[in-house]
View 1: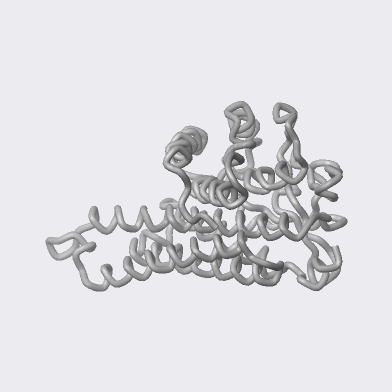
View 2: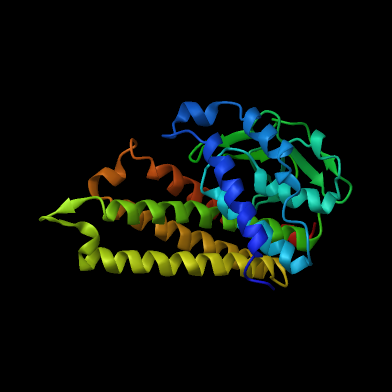
Length: 296
């Protein structure tokens, strides 16, 4: 599998990042997360981003998709972009202008099914990937509002689709977690060279050096794990790699809060939104029942 996107596609991801920056607020808030994201979805659709990354071989396409998902994860927009990106490839949809936000549902050990974003109005839950059948939008119940950037709801049934699609979906959600962790890492490094103590920036302290090095190590391991999940040979391997990526991403987010000191724990700084998103991805993976998925 190709591990590095092409130069042309990396340039495209910079443009994608600029678009998302224009769609994201300054400080995040519960009120912003609760607002309809119609403008953001229209911008993605009209810009052609829902079909981006599809050129080249299968391995090149997977690498491009993961790069897009990682950039998406840095901005916490509460829409199922990664899931839609993946689902459209298996549905072979060329009618992009009419695409609604799509998400998938996975079975849990209790016999029910859960789906990210299913409680958001306008989001459609795909029940059969190859046939393109969807459930009605906004019918998920018992939403998990712990992470408003990735609310998880209980739905009636799990999505049916090929194993390769499920592995790719797991990898893209893992890449989102990596993106959220990368944003935390970047903010922690910037803060460590702005905050001073004892007449010197805290980034010069050995303890911060070690923490920053560990964060970077975990971040790169998490990205490698998401690539591993995308190229996994079976669901168990993909889920194991995806969970590993989410765990490492959580470690990075937690350390970034520690680098900020006391202010890192405040709601005003906003790092907790990224930590919540990463923990929601990890929880999503841990609730998936492999036994039930193999029967799909």
